[in-house]
Image 1 (cartoon, rainbow, N blue to C red):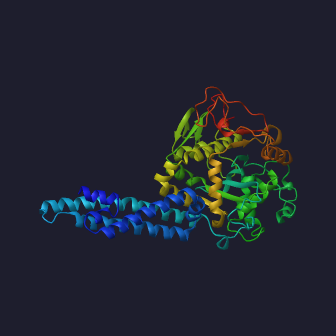
Image 2 (image 1 turned 180 degrees about the horizontal axis):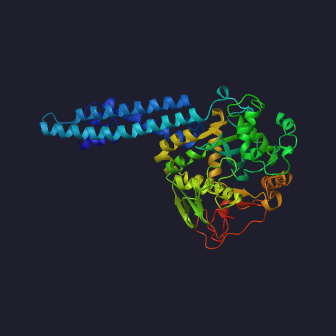
Image 3 (image 1 turned 30 degrees about the vertical axis):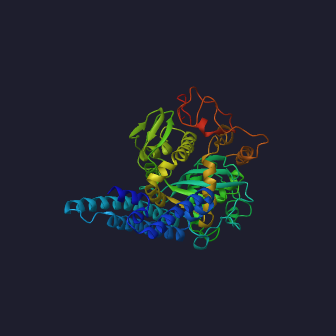
Length: 489
């Protein structure tokens, strides 16, 4: 049994010891060669691995290859045991040997099966969320000629992150969360820009057919200068496609295309792609990650409804609160309310918590978590994500994502007190100036690490983090630090 174990650890060795030297030497050489090739590819061909990881056809081949290798390994173990066991074994000895070999085969089959299932989960995720350019329609997606280096002429990539709430009791879909992530494609440094859901008069580019419909922005002048919930930013996703279907051209998600065009005009940016998250499914992905760790600076309501405004149900008080404290580990349910809770709180405070939630998810997606829980993460992602990012450039997106994880992520303050004290008439020109100043290349290298009072891990700071001046970017390590002086108002 000891020799059988050794032959399982070094495939082919059992054949050598059992008198089949040539066959054993061939299997050992083949095994060493496969390990060497795998190590070489892993260390020097990361681009090839990334391309394989997002190619459904290649993933199917890889899954079949994993299963085949597992079966061959099991056959080698069984054959080696038959060659090595003594002829004079008793029935009890044969039974013990057979049980031992069965355990070895089980030990090989389990990780092989898990690996194959993980590869198939990845294939299912890629095929479900990311469509190829030929199999999807988008009226606003850029045309990329060089799929291997799509950022060659793109210094900044701008993604529109949408949180859509289409839960029970709501008519249509409202995008309560609207965030632009502007990413430096060379360094991965990322600026997050949150837009208030109640912005009115959202602009459209002059060359857009929507500008002809709304030359003074998205609102109804005949109603006067009053709050117009059906012309809020969060209503555009549902209302405009219903009112003007296909106005921008063929699209698999007309609402997202409308918002890309309008948000881009409002912030002075060309929005390249969108990523839409169903907030009801958001908690699944947090649970799949094993939870997230955040700092809670003030009581955050769980539930609650004012009973007025678009999407509201009957008036009710929150069912509970998330209590303040540093380094709070939240499950999916609580993380959702940390990001969404607003009863008695201000919209800017909710926007900040949403940015901190994104920051916490990025920090939680470590290699150990991804390796051990990837099937659950892939399954949850398939249920809650929509995007117009095509399959063809996914390898480049993964490379960029690795840069973002290790780079600086900052919040761009649009200066609410000056530029949008209410949502009725925001100063988009002033906000565009703030955005351009925040993302323009710096003449001097700016340290991306937090100050000595904070660390990358939430809650470890020894004093209150510095407050940024209005209209200036702030590193999210500082913005999301524990600061019990905050009120959320």
